[in-house]
Amino acid sequence: MSGLYFHIPFCKQACTYCDFHFSTDTKRRKEVVDAMHIELQRRAAELGNKGLGSIYFGGGTPSMLSDDQLRGFLDEVRSLSTIALSAEITIEANPDDITEEVLAQWKGIGITRVSLGTQSFRDDRLKWMGRAHDAQQALRSIDLISKAGFDSWTIDLIYGLPEMTIAEWDEQLTIALDHGMPHLSAYCLTIEARTALHHQVKKGLVRPANDEAQAEQFDRLIARMELAGLIQYEISNFGKDGHFAVHNSNYWKGVPYIGIGPSAHSFDGVMRRWNVSNNARYVTAIEKSERYWEEEHLTHAQRVNERLMTGLRTIWGVDLGTLGDDVLGREESTVKKYIDSGDLLVQADRLLLTAKGRRFADRIASDLFMSSIE
Ligand code: SF4
Image (tube, rainbow, N blue to C red; front, side):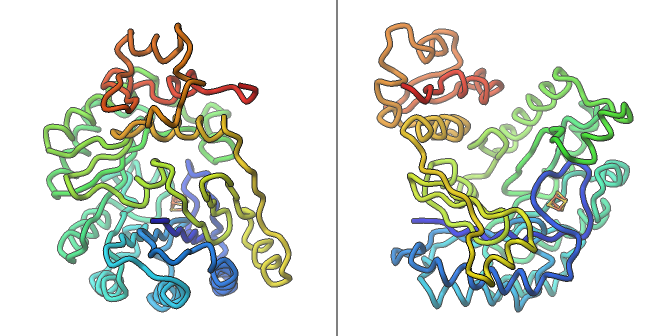
């Protein structure tokens, strides 16, 4: 079953490390929401009639939308298609938007899962990241979410911060585990181009963490989650049984999805399309019925490479049938080399990373890539 993604491109303030599309100018919020309704209506045929398996409000900061705006999107979807009874409906939220009342409203409109942008439980780190919340708000919102009766919930944490010690990371994980989270997404800080953090690093104001410290923190993360019974089902994602993210897992498995809103991506199995990453241009183009997206038909090699890049990061790996002789056929193939070195293994006709290989997932995947002329 396909997934549906809504990109809500607004934030209260810009986090220093963030390269997602968002605007802090919220004056256009209603215009953008209205334009997203029009996009949804025009693309109704793509929703199909099999029932959507997942809906995801991401961003940006979807928790900045009112209850009516969120309900409006879900009502629109129901009027155009069907949402499977078992569908996962996730909202990304920031701690400063969470109240008991808001959570009850979200439950009331059918949201089943909350993804909380916690990032850290330390005020100094949150301030450094430019987050709009403090540690107390993070803890309080986790407490409220855990009691609100959603099917599942998750928090995000960031490691690999400058001068982060293993003791600090351990403390972060202990706080998270003490709150009984059923799912964790833990990301290593990356310095993305055109972010405030990139600028600070270039000016020598910030010294990034070294690879060894980040690798040690990643290893500790895996060990602590394993001990707590959370399964590493994707490199950065850990969940208790029954709490794996459906929407994101389908994305990693190559299931089609439709993305609505500025910068949103869509994939139908052979074609990838992405909307313009500019709120004003998106609204104007929708109003004038002009084109607001670009698209590309993926070649066989591109499709294989995408399966490798996303699939290898998961416990489901990649179906050997997808890779075919192009990747596997050669006698001295790269696959064989990585199997011999203990980084890859084949199990039930699927190619998987071993625990050792997981540390180098992206590099191994790109080594296996088909060249476009193959
Ligand atoms: S709240 Fe999220 S999307 Fe917005 S700037 Fe911060 S990290 Fe980026």
